Length: 403
Image 1: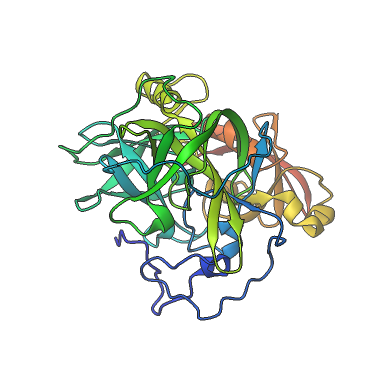
Image 2: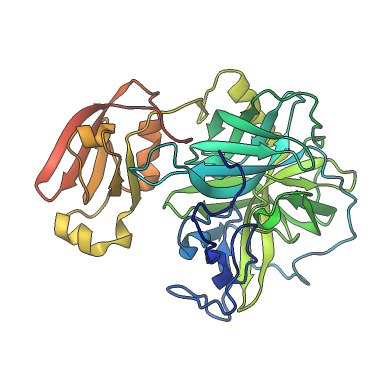
């Protein structure tokens, strides 16, 4: 299996991120004159963006998700970076590449899905990253810059805090990060963001800046229509870029104070530059890791979760189908896995899932929790609406991608 983030086509394809002025990763071509289609920000309006990961196998619009900043007032900044340069070695920082598949395709036909960053916690390969970096992945490949490549499995995730712990297979002797002491962060201190910027891999990039706020609250939306409301975030003006998610925000001593998770980009016709970024405090992330290693609790999900075998998106993206089926809320089914649980229950496209185990499903965001409460082999009761009316069936869930 190819572990590089390259197209699986026979001939080179144009990089979809070019419409946002983003350079192409290895294996993709950069069109001479990219022509934006479908979406463009107003010249005077920042285009919010989550720096989660490159998504080369989806349309370019999937590269642009919404970051709504709550409880954050306007901030005056001199630029996308500031403060004195921080010396950062990048020790313990690794590249995370994920692979997915189209609904109906065999698991032998995985394609590059995205690229992000991780932080090594133990020498035998426990790696901390964001939940949204590994979410939906059928395969996770981790590369130590200048070193070996490993296949990784998900130990546990906490979607509510956007934290994931993954384990590298057959790893030993790895360099680890050095976390800062809890509560040691202050506004104005010099920091650096370290990660797999632009998904290029290799030596981690270092973006210098300063802490511009503490205890921020944000709502970060993913292209699949799900979102998380994250609190207690560290705000920085370091230049955070796509691919940096899961990376480190470090202080002047090279200690990790936070895990990069979101950024808001100011877009122009030729550049993509972050004006504000956010990181989960490392103490918060490590508390979640402790819960995972202790066997769960709270919003933590351990190991493999149940899979229904559908692809969904927000219902409001297709008002014609919503009107056709006579539904106003739910998760719109856009693909059904052949011979999967949903298909065996008779679900077809178009359909809208409206309930799981008696819990109402009003959006893709509310579909995940009741499904993920089950492990493969357990049953769940699914309610959906299609052209023939409303249906309810009990299905046996199977193994699938990461939460």
